[in-house]
Image 1 (tube, one colour):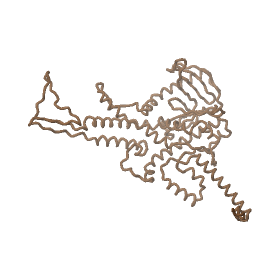
Image 2 (cartoon, helix red, strand yellow; image 1 turned 120 degrees about the vertical axis):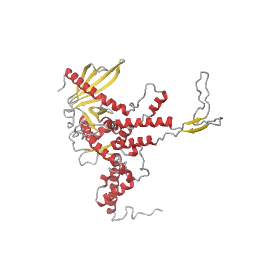
Image 3 (cartoon, one colour; image 1 turned 90 degrees about the vertical axis):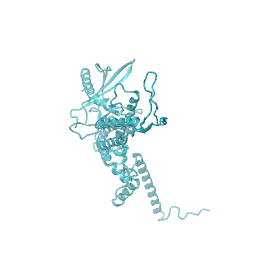
Image 4 (cartoon, rainbow, N blue to C red; image 1 turned 30 degrees about the horizontal axis):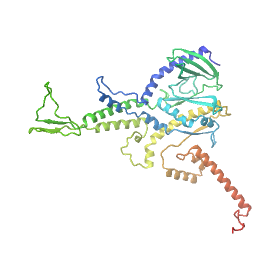
Length: 463
């Protein structure tokens, strides 16, 4: 049953209030990702040189941590139970260019802790299908009766802004289990007006959620950025100390004694030397002596920064070499590299389990929205993930060859585990195998009909 106009407006207002509550945390996370946060102390009287060193200290490792995990996540197919080819709903995924767009969903979930996508009936490439649209939690707010266990939200609100007759207008779309409501609000969100409502006919609120940490029942899902914020601040502070020492104290300061200091007309001392790395001092006084102070040792700063990166590697569960902590891990074999990346692969495996359920939920919803028969009831279908683990091709070929030979495993199953082998490669290999089997069967038939002789036996020899 559709909401009345007043109820739709009131529900939108309540969801906007929830959105404002979440906005502070989400905006801070985005600021860290965009390298807009710098907690290095800058006094009011700081010189331009000082401020320039502060800007140079803003090293941002947050995108690197998110990217390291996200680059191991790529859905390559969607198979029904006991099927070797993709289910029909996979075509909706392809029509919506989700091979490329899926990365944004995973990155948003890794960054903020959650991301969303809607699937609604519509037209894609000029034909009736389902339109899939990914959203960041900064653009879509969803409320669940049970935030941990419920598959579908009760309500969801999508918010964006556009220019209309020179004024910035906020467009709102409210979704529930029966309808999609179009509303309009002021930029400050103080006024909300009803526009229209449309029945989407899906029976559920058509919003799918991806959670970065699905198993955290107490505190909900948390992204990769929030736990690393103190380490990011620490890294920038250490880098600033390194640059200050490098700029002002790494160059040896010289001293001179036993000489008269000249004065200007006002009686102020005049500096006798202009110290620089490319200048030499000289003194004509027989009592003059020269010397220098020891430069500041930068190794303490470098080791401190390296230690921060090592702790970041452990907390984020990414391999040290991903953060350029390469001590003792140069010239590694494929086996040793795989051992170092084992922690990352376990983390990626956990994300594949959580994100895979959401992908399957989205494909079921998209199949229903596109009118594909049986897609909604296909609860046993599974997403196929691309294998991105670092392994030697020779090692993989040897292991899978033994499995196929000694255990009698069909080679078609092992194709899916070959590094870099995509779903299109598998389908092409299957077509070629079937074509070769057909040719071999034809040859056997011709040989049988000719009494075991080659098909051209008895033919006259060419002159």
